[in-house]
Amino acid sequence: MPTPSDVQELSYEQARDELVRVVSELEQGSASLEDSLRLWERGEQLAQRCEEWLIGAKARLDAARAAQLGSGTPDASR
Image (cartoon, rainbow, N blue to C red; front, side, top):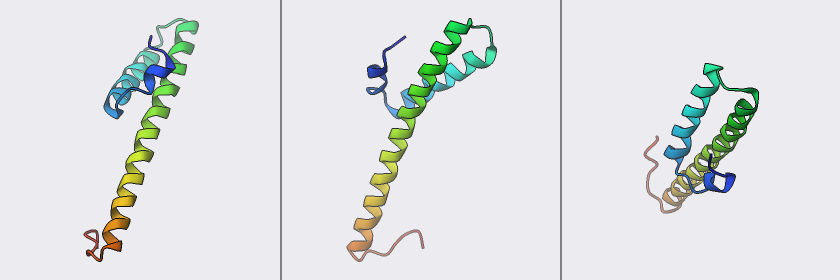
């Protein structure tokens, strides 16, 4: 299993897809306790990475909207 530092190199889509696989494996319930804990920890890391990507995307959208409003361009969402 990749290390936590590897998680920081994943794109949003890669982290999300791996998280889906981890959750699926946990839901099967066939893993040992140790493996389940390892999967859970990996899932937490992946979820955090996805959240980081989403927070960053929101910040970029907010900045773009602020720039648009600051330039006098009408807000397309109205």
